[in-house]
Image (cartoon, rainbow, N blue to C red; front, side, top):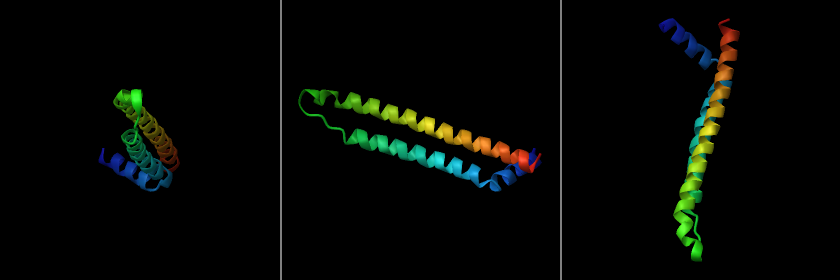
Length: 92
């Protein structure tokens, strides 16, 4: 088990595409969450629409959360594909 784990770390460290896809996924996830919260915090309606502000902000945050999860899953999928490709190239 230890040899296989060491081999996986070796393949991971020798694959810059895998590392970049993983890191970009995490960074884009965090940025999309923050962007959604920023837009929801700066959402202000006037007049009769003022009562809908909280519910629309909550829905907006949920949509950004879902989009961020899709982006994270996509980047991690690319990362896994690159890892498998390099595993086959390096390990056989």
